[in-house]
Image 1 (cartoon, rainbow, N blue to C red):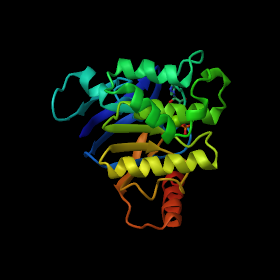
Image 2: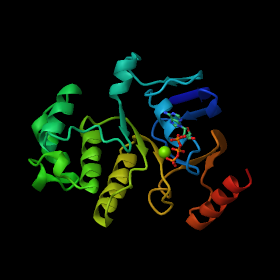
Image 3: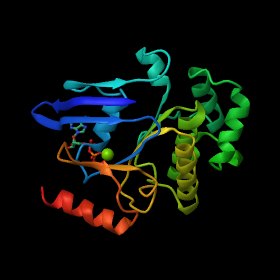
Length: 232
Ligand SMILES: Nc1ncnc2c1ncn2[C@@H]1O[C@H](COP(=O)(O)OP(=O)(O)OP(=O)(O)O)[C@@H](O)[C@H]1O
Ligand SMILES: [Mg+2]
């Protein structure tokens, strides 16, 4: 479970997040929506313990140890930054992260995950030769390698082609079915939003909506969302 209590974040004079409180239960799938600059990426980083809020706090509760480094090991974070080493091959990148996260049976796991994201054929090429979409696929592989319990996905569809998008949608579905807790920022209403049990809308650093999806009709959600951000 993640509990955010009165999270505010200021950078200089600017308030990026304003007094946000929320609880995300284990296995929940929350989609974070909001216009550019609303604070979505920042909130995701705060909840994933990458950024510290100026005031308020974030508490993660899992079975077992509650040491911050053990909790961080249960987190997978996908963002615009790939966290990959350009000069290393895909295989070497996964080896590096696998050792860092002490992944069991690493060779088999790396093979399996490269196959899953469709990169087996290119896995011995250095990452600097990869296209943007291939980098995104490899980022996904890196994210999943240590089988995190909790996934933070910041616009994961960016840069993916049709096939890449389908692989990701399917992967997200499977992860959700496996009971992973998921928080995803996206601008694509037609990808994954229907899988989410709950949407959270941010605008200008504030939470303006947090609730269950009552309709599976995406057009309703889209219209509702537009109304939320336009009334501000
Ligand atoms: N390191 C930083 N220094 C200064 N301002 C920042 C920094 N990071 C974010 N901001 C500001 O915080 C606000 C929220 O940024 P954030 O990246 O969280 O928005 P977002 O909702 O993810 O937007 P987008 O949809 O464009 O990705 C923006 O006004 C941005 O300029
Ligand atoms: Mg963002």
